[in-house]
Length: 274
Image 1 (cartoon, one colour):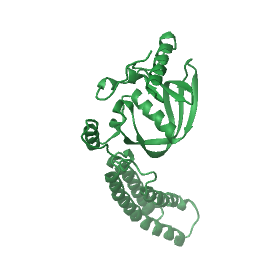
Image 2 (image 1 turned 135 degrees about the vertical axis):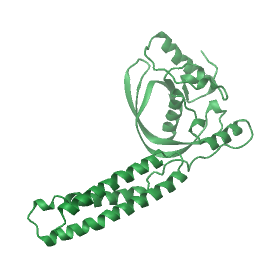
Image 3 (image 1 turned 30 degrees about the horizontal axis):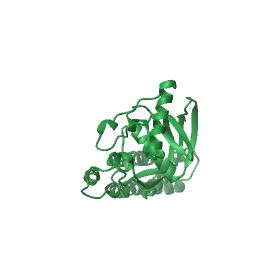
Image 4 (image 1 turned 180 degrees about the vertical axis):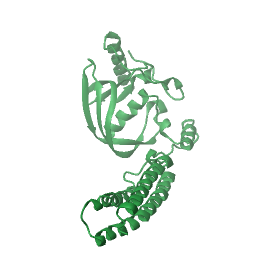
């Protein structure tokens, strides 16, 4: 039976859907309702919550076949990209969000059988992620920053344009990792130097290693300072990047700075030949 599609600003869509535990007659009817509603509105996919069923179920049309995904979960995701998307719930207004091109997922089919699937296509992956969002109390607008969310609300009211958030997320590869990589290599050799007194080495050899330790310690501290300031630059540019947040950055700095200090003290007492 064709059901009424929820549209913004209907907030009854904002609930956490419960898992499917039984695949009996009522479940089969729910799947049929989703398919009938999709056909009536010419939709490629639909989540159960969009027609008022608060369950973890979506149906996606693949060619001419309608596939039911019960209790779907994404296991891994990679290859981030900016996806311009439209949803019937938001009256097909375009909104740019971050998605992943390659997904591995698990789900239960119409019979309740556990299945796995790999998606490696931008359009298919974005569609799946958008429908999955609805099952966990998330919509396209929820993925926007507060200022952009306000802009989107105005656009939905016919007062403006939808925001573009292509610069709001993490860079694919952050250059700050180079600071950490060099620091880790210096720390590794500082750590190895602590074991040199166990071997019959000359004072000249120990002196050379101790000189290395004396220069490596401040070098690591300077690298961590460079890491912190560059990370703060990224945090301002990519506001929704969780790995850019100050707490994470301070943790990286403290762990390596403390390790460098410990190795430097150990070198003074163990490697110093004088």
